[in-house]
Image 1 (cartoon, helix red, strand yellow):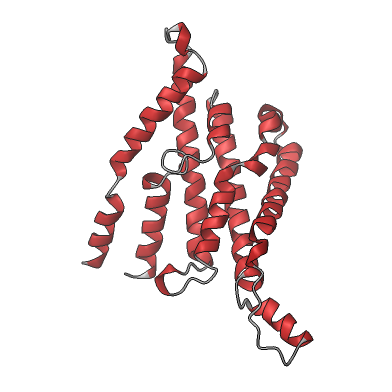
Image 2 (cartoon, rainbow, N blue to C red):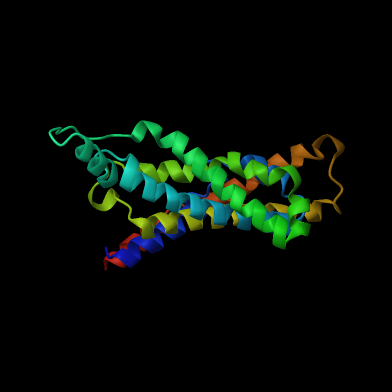
Length: 230
């Protein structure tokens, strides 16, 4: 399978089959909290996509060059200090801490940009914009990147291109999920929902039904892989 085929498979499986919200059940806080209006949902999805791509790219570079066992930059520094040493430098214990700092920095950049150029959207997000820092979609993507960089070899190793594809389409999958939910919830304002189910109740039921609907994409990646092999 060539490189382009693997990129397409990563994109399709990440956005649809292994959707962050409906398959892995991460990112549910903003998925529920910011899906009341379509414009806010789209803005949040776009912001999460940008932050995810930026954080994943930074995480790949830090993992590959600094944190992974035998990383070139840390190995060069260590052997410069200790020329006689044959030890393999491994800073992977710092992965979580470094990724959290990278995500926080990326969110800060988005927050400053929105406050300067899109103040209406910045005010609409309210407390949910800083909470992108704790959005588990972004940390999940960074940890998935770590799994395919630190110690991975052969087809399991992801270069920067595959990493960015995974990150962008993880964000696109989140964007798709939150926009669909927002569209349905706007229509629910005009519906006669039973009183016990109003609010979170009907929202969780709809989320479950959407997760079942997305299960219909299962197997598409295998069909694509078989198609690319012929």
